[in-house]
Image 1: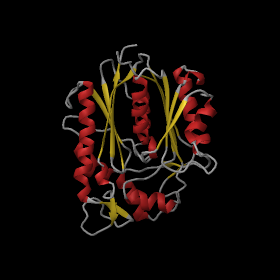
Image 2: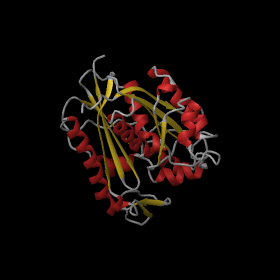
Image 3: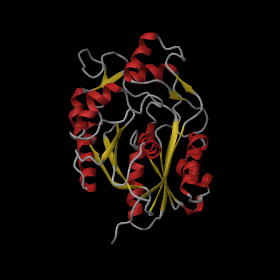
Image 4: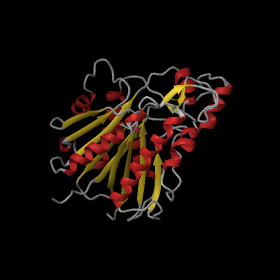
Length: 328
């Protein structure tokens, strides 16, 4: 059976209009300085329902870009981390209904911060079967954190949460951007090791806010990242040093986690990862799709170029996606 081409018909990131900074919410200057060091400038902050107020606008924007009417969508895969509202027992079905994709198969994915990655892999795998033609993949989260939790507890651990939604429309049409490879890797043996109480001498975080990363978990996490990236490169027929790989994007975490823990797991020879955390923080399940949208709309890839997107989650899972630029 011929494997269908997987085209990226559209991508969108929808952020709330309200943003906050550490200093705008009165965080003590010592903690604000820590946020500066971690590379956080501001985060989007929302109120309301994630599906109706964020996911729907993101998905509608993606549909407009794609040229597909809602009735073309035969697969909806929606991912989230935080609660979606007491009145939304099945947010994936509600999203499909509100969009007008009334006959789509609607699937919900919960994979912590790799929800978007798991959703993309689910959608691409199903599209490749030939049973579906057009998929909408989306995420949305509103974290409702008070400033102390958002800017001190979480930011000091390298995970400053921002509210927002993402969406992409994938189909089996050759597009200027296509998905060349998707690979995931898991290390559930590290599930209980991700965070521990702060202990003096921990080299990962120097300040005793809440929980911190266990150093003994790092080898498993790095191996998981290396495996997913290596498998994706192999699928695409690429070596890490291939000059056609023009961009790399990683989960939107703080500088310490990225540089000391996760970047060393990337194969040698890849381009330096893009720095995309500053204005959004970590968008829950949405980082992979937000990074895809950033590359789609802001990185000029010429035909034959590739980009690599790497996404991680507590638990521990990694998804690596390689996209390829094609002639129109």
